Amino acid sequence: MSDLPIEEIRKLFAFTRVYLDQQHDLFGPSLPDLITSPEITVDARKKAELLDSYYKQIANCQNCKLGKTRKNLVFGSGNPDAKLLVIGEGPGADEDETGYPFVGRAGQLLTAILKAINFTRQDVYIANIVKCRPPQNRKPEPDEVAECMPHLKKQIEIIRPAIILALGATAANTLLANADSLGSMRGRIHTFENTPLVVTYHPAALLRNPNYKPETWQDVQFLRKQYDSLVQ
Ligand code: URA
Image: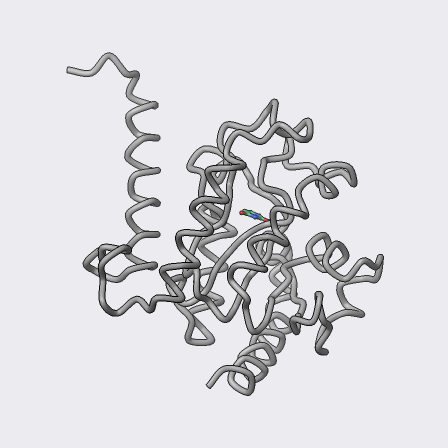
């Protein structure tokens, strides 16, 4: 029998379930071999390899102080060939624990929001402005964002999404280099280095304030429309 305390065993089961759910979302009921599966195009395979090799380069990053307190660097997950890239703020406790973005409560809501506009997590790629958890879930500080943005830019360069969805003001203000309110950025197309970008509320904000739900619904329908016009 294991010597682990029961709480640790429970936590282990909980994270295993999150991980398996995520793999199910990503790959469906049977996990394909990413390297040999014939349904995966050469371009997608190349992107997967490039992302994997970049992840290996930065997995032990200590370029900012978040490196000292994180458990896992949360690189990003999803379809390396996604046409929709979703960008949040930074990992929370569950993401820090598992190494995967948006696996906690906000992540479950994000999965439901994507599903409402006919995307699975297998269709999209999800990343954050910063890859390491800010202590006590505080907002990432400007020096942390500045150190981490080159990593996100590299991911964008590899994935080449057709459109970006920025979740919340931190992601939107960082990507658009402005200090505008979230409300004023909604409902129109912006661009991040030539890639169209739309903005909506962060799912964690929706959990705190469900009154934002109707506006979020409008935003993601707008996103779907733009996506459909850009992606054949
Ligand atoms: N909030 C974020 O912004 N990103 C995550 O990965 C999880 C919660």
